[in-house]
Length: 180
Image 1 (cartoon, rainbow, N blue to C red):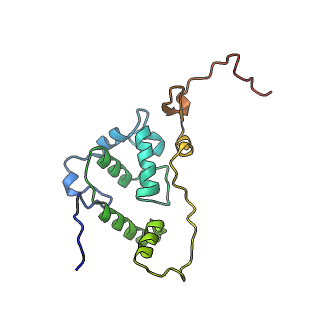
Image 2: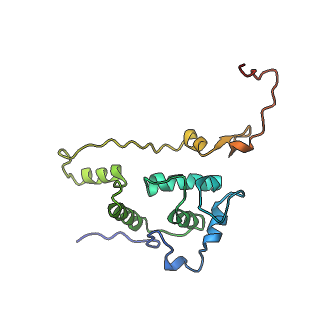
Image 3: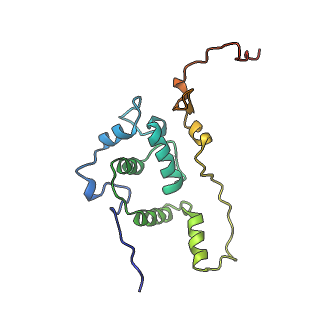
């Protein structure tokens, strides 16, 4: 007899679930996740997300629900997930991961979670000797390089701000002159 793990949260599959219908609105979700300069009428581009939401979006599309398409644009599913996180909604993660893997099969996308699947297969002693080895090329480090690629840098106080809003450096006697 298989042991059933208890389910907590809703079985999210990329669209609004019945439990959230009366609380969710696309407009309110945009207001929660976007920065002040965002265009609320068009596509939800990653640069228009507030700093914390930009990091959250990166984690969603690179780690939690990896996708191989346009990472610079937040999908409707990404927006709903960010809203769910920010409003403390419970999600049944086992269901979501299973759904995401099925969705990858439908769209002929690369199977997500290759390291996780390999760990499970090894745990259950499934021989992998005859299987082709494919090196995973994506890096999932979320460090300074990733954050600066979003268009942010740290100011003099150590706060992350958009590069365009950095105050210009005022040259002093310690600032080197630019090269001719």
